[in-house]
Image (tube, rainbow, N blue to C red; front, top):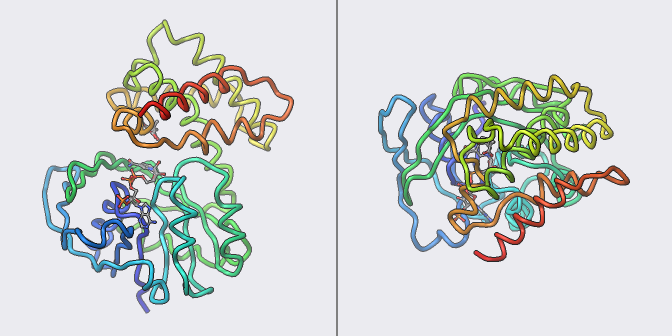
Length: 299
Ligand SMILES: NC(=O)C1=CN([C@@H]2O[C@H](COP(=O)(O)OP(=O)(O)OC[C@H]3O[C@@H](n4cnc5c(N)ncnc54)[C@H](OP(=O)(O)O)[C@@H]3O)[C@@H](O)[C@H]2O)C=CC1
Ligand SMILES: CC(C)(CO)C(=O)C(=O)O
């Protein structure tokens, strides 16, 4: 039986996944927030990497239709995950729930909220941008990894198959926590620095940022190592530099969030590190956290 994918969070990434899944004739529905109830477009325009444009018309659902969900991909911002899932009364307990947001620390609360559901997490390096109310651009193709958060989640590795054919790549990792930490390690340097200094990612390679990038990388690496991460500082530095190079002309998501007056995901990136630092000194993380919070408060 072909399972219908329900995507909770019809934003840049959610619409991009919906467009790529429908292209493979996979049944998809987009679950919209309450505020869209009165004004949603029946279709959105998807601009593919090759500039080809097409209209995508998935099924639309609202929270009260949670009982019909077969497989749930959660693609809201990190701070929206718990309120969004909390409104899904009647979600069947056998439905797998896959969390695809940036940052960490939410899966633990979701496990308490939905103790019976198979719970999975994922990381993706696809890029997507909203260009208007009903227009979404796919900006970069990347890898997507899923893995189990709880015991029941372990039975769902087969979900990577339809995702791989739609997205170009999807893999399964029993240690998804490690992949999330590695993504967080990148975001914890690039995102707050680019947001606070109002620069694009590539500018972090300029000599004026060398010291702060180095100090911040060491702090991030120390905290994540204490949490069990095995990547060496040297391997991490190389990975970070390569992401800075590959995304040199991008504005990071945190930069864009601040620039558009939206809340950021800082609590689940730098905030997660601060929460787990214990006695470890993390002065640069602390300072950047406060600075981003201050900017958020001003918007
Ligand atoms: N965009 C990208 O390139 C990438 C994003 N990510 C991560 O993926 C996540 C999503 O990012 P992105 O798509 O850019 O974010 P967006 O802000 O574009 O999308 C989030 C969507 O979630 C919706 N939403 C919020 N609350 C609810 C709710 N209660 N019920 C239903 N829908 C809800 C919002 O709806 P509304 O507009 O109505 O408020 C919005 O459409 C983030 O964690 C991001 O860091 C990861 C890799 C790449
Ligand atoms: C990798 C990076 C930093 C690319 O901009 C990103 O994931 C983000 O902006 O959130």
